[in-house]
Image 1 (cartoon, rainbow, N blue to C red):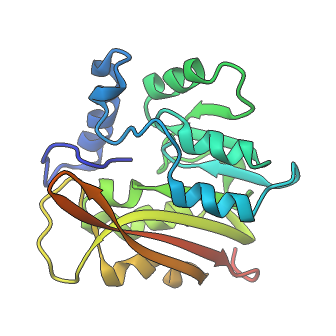
Image 2 (image 1 turned 90 degrees about the vertical axis):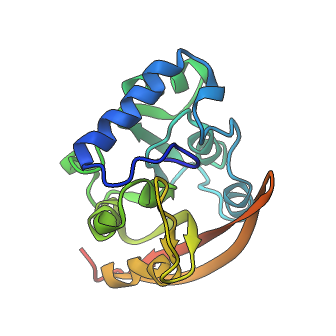
Image 3 (image 1 turned 135 degrees about the vertical axis):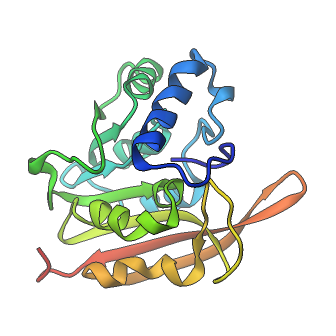
Length: 219
């Protein structure tokens, strides 16, 4: 969801909802006003999809899809793709950017998901959402993400991280390193994990790209 938004530490969930809606609304179609909009899919996601195509048979969902780049990468890799965002402005913007898209774009709230989505997707892509809400909401947010994955399915998680105990004044609130494995408490096994740094002017930001498999005996 977020990578470089201004500091709004201590906001409640309703306030964060309004922040995300407002930032897309105020942008007025200028992607430069969206701090986390790269206008391209994440490179590590693309690399994974090349090796793990959907072949037109598998379903995927992109969480908090923003302007749609990661969702389009999922669809281009052969996944029947749904993508959602809390912001109606973001969804309309994504549709305008990709008018001939195979992606089903829709407005939805991660904490009030349609029942038919629960446990419905072969592949779930989560990028930056966990860090966009305060750390005390991490497990609730992770549980909502996990609920979308079918038993035996795959969850991809792209996140910023920090060493355990390191100060974080967010948003974003990079995950403590030990919390990168929060999904192990939710019925998932870690299949692969890549820790790397994203270079920004004057700094290098620790990132993680993890591949999780949901246990088949997990509802």
